Amino acid sequence: MMPAEERRKRGWREEFSVVVGGGAVVGGGAIKTPKTGRSRQEVQKRAPKLVESGKKTLILHGTKTSDVLNVILSDIYHLKKGESIKYSRKNDSIRPFESGGETSLEFFSLKTDCSLFCVDIYPGSTLYASNPTHTWTSPNKNFSVGFMADGSTHYAAVTYNGIPVWKAGGNDKGGGAVDSSASLRFLADGNLCLVNGSSGSIVWQSYTSGHGVISATLDDSGNFVLKNIFDPSLSSPVVMAYSSDYAEGSGILRFLRLDSDGNLRIYSSAKGSGKITERWAAVTNQCLVFGYCGDVGICSFNDSGPICGCPSQNFDPIEPNNRRKGCKRRVQIEDCPGRETMLQLDQTQFLTYPPELDTQRFAVGIAACRLNCLSSGSCIASTALADGLGSIYMKFPGFLSGYQSPALRSTSFLKVVSGRRSFEVSPETDHKKFYVWAFEEFEKGNVKEIVDKSMVHQEEVNMGQLIRAIQVGFWCIQENPSHRPTMGKVVQMLEGITAIRNPPNPNVVFEEGFYGKNENVSGHDVSVFSTFVDSTRVPSTSSSFRTAQTSSFVLEWNLGGASSSF
Image (tube, rainbow, N blue to C red; front, side, top):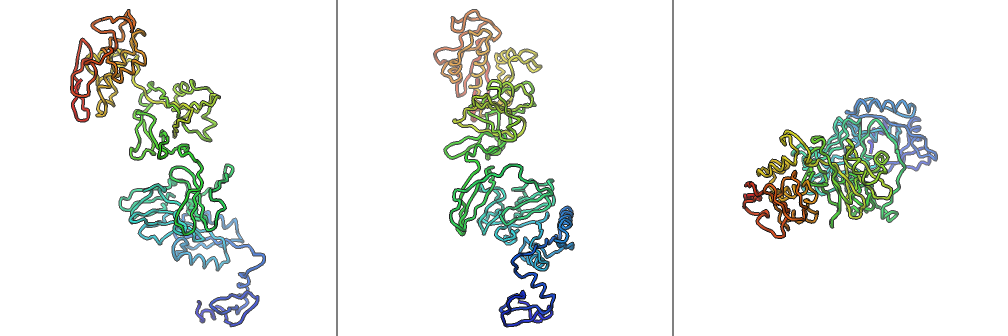
């Protein structure tokens, strides 16, 4: 309550009587009436009216407001000249988002009879986990930005009466977790960063540096907004969504949140319950959320929910412990020009949404879906929709998001680097066709020379299976088609059910067919297999393996710590 002496100086007198009208102000148990004419005018100006007069705009800035924002505030003042009041002096005590600072703001607002005012959280502002009472609050004080503790772990969050409605770093378990010395920093470049104090590492950031961000605000609806110079309007129709508890009960907070998995959801929380319940999701099938499994990741489902994987062994996960980070190629296409091929992915679709639909959708059919992408220098993948119209998607460099499900009829193709082509000629093959050179090296026992170099030093490679695959490969490229095995026999040979005999030189043409009598040319047995498993089967322990009747070799290979010889 104002001291009596101070009240007298300001022209007030106290009367212990009820005053009707005249703009009396009641306070402290006494009825205060203005003493001077000027005081009476001020009271009458603030008294309730049937038709309220327009309020003025109070424009002021803090000690660290940027030059860009000062220019904008000046422009607003000139646009509302006559209906606004602008304070040009920097006011150290006005910090409306900090405890105590809002008092000065309320004083100026009351003094100037302004109900609309422009304030900002300015670049350079910082919140600390060690000071949880220091927060940025909304004007109605229902929402706040600050740190909340969960045991020894801290999170930066927007809260409503203590209930977190958004966390920096996502709502997944462990997402955005920091220690007690962490800070939430609004940097001078416009970036908002959550920094872990012990390591100094950035746990989460808004990625808004260089985008013209000049201020931030937490509005009465709980939205924490980073503002830039522009104010774009909605460019598409508004979509109405209703939560599953729509129109139920009172005292329920409902909020819309874009979660870290890329899905937009509505949640609700009954006041005082401390519990948050999901009420609506924009995409019910999580695998249909673009980018859920990262770039080149393929999303599918198991019994526990959506899982992420890579398209094939041509790719490795970027982070093995977090498959949602996407996949990377083992060999880049640009590093091997002329060796592209299309990897077929059944029951798979590469997600395509507007605005890409207009530029990436064609009607050509499944055969052209594969071949057109293979022949195009810019296409990296394609999807045949099997919709009866021949519709396909042609995907170009950028983000690639895949979905695989037994319910899908679509077939997709992904451009990858193939192995060497049998007709390639290079100095590495002594200027011979690759298959001719490879067979010569195989007969010499130089298996390491003809296989992919990336496989040579991998301990998990089973060299027995690798040599078996090489032998089958030589049988499958025999010059005479009748000498080539059927696919059924190929499978049996690869699985070790049928023993493989030594393949002849692919350049030699035999007179008899594959299923005719066995001919021996240059010391080679033309029969590719026998009906019994003999000593030519590749053993799993140390042994010697003869690759041809005319030559043999021993190859040392580390298989799980044991030395195996072939």
